[in-house]
Amino acid sequence: MSEERDPVNHRAGRVRLRRILILDDDDAFREDLAEYLTLAGHQVDHTSQPETLTPARMCQIDLLLLDLNMPGIDGVEVLRNLCRCVLSPQVVLISGSDVDVIAAAAEAGRMSNIRVLGTLHKPFDPEDLLTLIGGDAAQEFDRGAPGGAPSEAQVIASVEASLAADTVPVMFQPKCHPDNRTFAGAEALLGDVWPGLGRISPSAVIAAASVNQDLMRRLTLRVVETAARGAAAWQAAGLRGPVSINMPIDVLTERQAASLLATTVRNAGLSPADVILELTEDALYGSSSDAMMAIAQMRLAGFGIALDDVGQRQSGLLQLARLPITELKVDRALIVQSRGTEKSRSILEALIQLGHRLGLKVVAEGVETEEDLSRVKAMGADLVQGYLISRKLALAELIAMFKEWTKPDTTTGDVKAEEAQREDAKPDNAQ
Image (cartoon, rainbow, N blue to C red):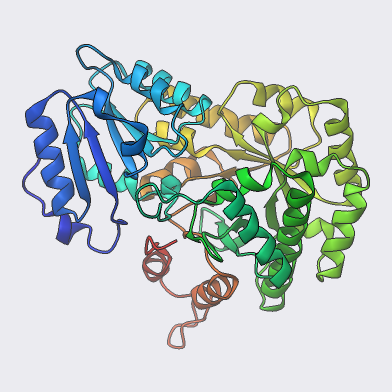
């Protein structure tokens, strides 16, 4: 543990305060790390007893720092237990084991739908942990009071109310060119604040809506409509770039989906050519002929198709050859892994090169540090997206930020200095 830096002053205003639990059998390490995180403003508890991690306790924390090597029970067994929790925290794996072992455990956790935020190899600089938990995948939402997670029925009622009032919260995370960070479009994302619920994870909203196909269809169409209106607004403001929209495969494969989506987009003042529909590897894994036909119809209607989360499973390489996609989005997890191992960097570079050889535009997601940006830029990524550029923003914030970035300097006639752009773009960690 380093004692030279004051984490409060060093990171003031840049890390969202979180409820953290450290599970590690090394008493000195655990206590030092807890002290450091507490000085940074977080609410921290720590233990060496895995059996104390009851489902009720898991609901009371935002982040679990989990040691993989503990006597009596290993961290992988703890991950298995987390799968049984209805509301589980994010996880950062910490270990002195071989980096490939840590990476394998992290991947196994993600495949079990555990929100593994990243890995750290002991010994590590605690500053790296602060950077990690303030990053793009931090999913910054309030989990509410202990035991106070809304029920599925409450979430559905909130979605219905938002649809009726046309207040479905849609925000936008920008994509930029890596050379100069100029605007290149944005991804439409559900906001975190819903009527009657307060802050809630968008993934929880999607999970609840997915149990009713009609509700999921109506929510998707409303997001498409709002996103298209947003893109039309930024085009009117002089910004150029498409809007990307996550598309549930069940909605995509409904009859007449292509014509319905095209009509929705045009009625909002946009062309299908200005919309990229994002589909995940998992959604297309072993996809049916109906899915393949639906994607072909979307391309015929003029929509772009992005394969999202590429790098999470090897099937993505097969999907690249099978599907008429136009954009490849490298998963954030691979960006994070590329910080630590040469093997991951080689895989990342190979994916970017493969995308270009197939004639695809390649987007690097989860770019959170200057080092991330330099790495993917050198590897040839076409676009970048992540917290280094910006968190997700309301439409007005998005337009204002990029209009300010491109405002000519009255004394030099040039665009504002890159350093000023970077400072404006840094997230305030209040998603």
